[in-house]
Each structure stands twice: as C-alpha cells, then as structure tokens.
Length: 313
Image (tube, rainbow, N blue to C red):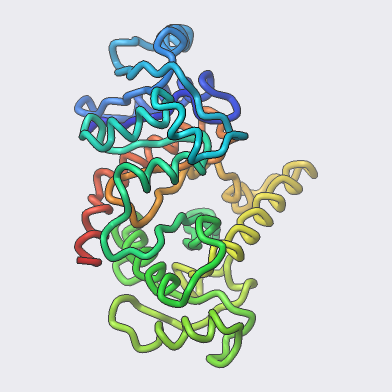
C-alpha cells in the first residue's frame, strides 16, 4: 500500500505534515509506504530533523504549491507541478493508492473531479464529519459543505453513501440513517426536506429511521448517520468547532468534550469519487496529520470506493 500525502498543504506545512508523517509511519506495517509530495530538499531535511530515516519514505518532487487564497480551478490548471496536481496524477496512474491533503479543499475537489472523477451514477459527491455522542462513539453527518444546494435525489444518495461509510469504515452493519429537520413529524420541514423524506421512507437501500432535530445530533438513541445539505451541515460543523474552542478557552477538561477536537479524526474522505481522497482541516497539527494518514489507510484497506461503485452500478 502506498499512501500519498501533500507535504505542502496546510497552514503549518511542510513542518507539521512531515512531523505527522513520521508519527504515522511508526504505526504502519512494513508493506505500507508514505509518499510525500512537495519540495524534496525541504522534505528530506525535515525527516532528518525529526529523527527519522528518509529511506522509510518516498518523495515525489513538486516545485509549486496551490495556496489557500487561489482560485482552485485556475490554480489546478496553471500549476501542473504543484503537490496537489502531482498527487492526483500519481493517484490516477496507480503510483499511489490514496491521496490526502490539509491544503486547499477547493483544489482537492477540483483535482478529484478532473482526474479520477466521480463514481458513475453519483449525482454529487459529499464530505462527512463526526458528531461525538460519547467518549468512544460518534455519529456521521453529511454533507458538511461540498454542496450547499441539493435536490432530494442528491440527499437520498447521501443516505446510501453514509450507510456504506458507517458499515465498511466504522463497522456498523445496519446503521440508522436519519434526515435532519426542524421536527420529527413526517410533515415537517421545507420543500427539500419534505420531498427527500418521501423518497427515503420505505426505501430498500438503507435503514431509514425518519427525521431528527438538531438536538439529536449528539445523542446515541436516534441515528448513526444524519443527512442534510451542505449549507446546513457546514453551519452545524462550524458551530461545533466554535463550541470546542470556547471549551478550551475556558480551560474546561472533559473526556467527552475532547472528542470535539478535530485533530482526533484527522480527515474525511470525499465520498462518491473513484479513488480514496482524504481532506483535512487547514490548521492541522502533526497529530491531525498522523490521523489523516491513518484514516487514508483505513479507506484504502476497506475498499470503500469499490463498495460504492458496486452499490451504484
């Protein structure tokens, strides 16, 4: 297995990325290699500085970096030797088995759609996030920002994607899929949610348990996967992140509340594209990068992309 990592992506790259890669490499088996994409001289120097052996890593030299402030589509086209562009070239040509980055989310999405493309039958890919319900369990929420405007058919497919992720990555054989709404009653909601509810009820593709409200997101008794459009999901995600920052600012220590720390999860896959692509928060520190890489390993090992292709074939 070869795990591609954008060494130049993120607010603290390449230092944090290389440090995280060193941490992750210690947890990988001997048949797994981390392939770092970026400036080779910097990468080798940082590996040595971190007390690791450069021979334990592979490097694909890249002379350009797509910055967070750049237009993703233009930058991907105009910087063919960027770490992100080279990552997708390597993924498309099977030089790596998965690609992860804490860099420009937009560029990662553009790269995925331009090179490896979405699974046939998928209307819109999605990204998911984790909503903690206890010290050891979390619910899955999708979409959390990829598609702010959705049709009912798209949300229905999110139910399938979330169900497959929960089954093959989280080990839940019969995940409960719910629709985020302003009330539990069947008739509640706006036009989008009402029409989606009609599609989801009595379906045979996943275990639909009905509507849930916002105050159910952090409970374990209603659902395992919660579906919403990317506008709503992104608001929920950012509010949860803000909640965690307030907790830390007030110096409150609690094992459950620490589950809201995004660095514990590292990254999340783009669900619905043909190869494993993982994106992480731009502010990722070494621990978050380590978990991003380990998450990529899990997605590759589970054959999640193949399972999604089979479901939509």
